[in-house]
Length: 340
Image 1 (cartoon, rainbow, N blue to C red):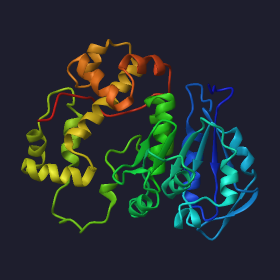
Image 2: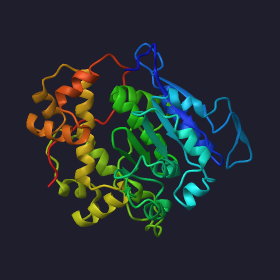
Image 3: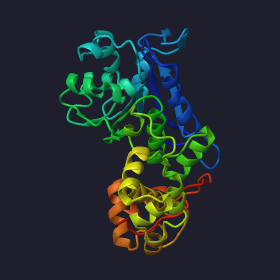
Image 4: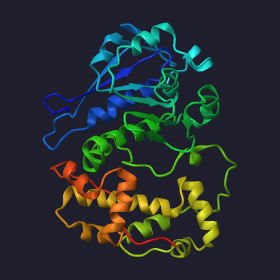
């Protein structure tokens, strides 16, 4: 297991035609993840198919010190997007050079892609029979090219344990923060997000970013209702209460909310409650029954059900893993009841 003295090594594979922004995401997010003693939790290195300059989609190249042999030392490999994937994109197959590079990856290494980097993982067989995503504009082509992959074009990222994929561009930030959260808990992930000046967690999926007709500028959003409910999540909340905050019908509110956030009001509120429960499990010694009430789930049984569904572990197991001194962080205001 990685320690502060021997931090988890992330190796980023830089391919010709890479997008500089996406190449920088793992360095920025993992590089800002620190423990309470300000010690780095990850070591981030970059390699190419050969040492030397790697062309980007901009008017400059990046110089990479390491060749593909570095992949053999990785605990996590990240493949950012490239606009010049050649037969990987056009035919769904690896070049001999890329196949030889990926042969260095040790079994059990965590594999991560950002945007069209998912084509590389799919062509290498890492995504067969697994859920995956990519930029919504490429999702249909991605599914045709790799029919064995369970493509979900609606999500910002997928997590299938040792293989994770993200949608386009900034969704790579969401995925890397998710990995930090999974590895070290919500407090450190929130602190990392604060250092990077980005939201610690974005609700919804890609649907909110797909181009649609411009909405009526006089049509209100749902921000006021979301702020209202975050201040009283520990109370029972009905959908009609939320619609009342925006002075619209329940049907209109629900439609606007999904268009704006990519999920239903109920799904969004449940996510806020789970986040609140995570924070309380990490930072307090409160009994599970009390946390259930504070986070808005009402009963310990309900809390266990939702935490297990969202995190894959029980509240007790989560607390055992992440109950530690961590950088302070701010989060949603509190949690509560059910939406009817």
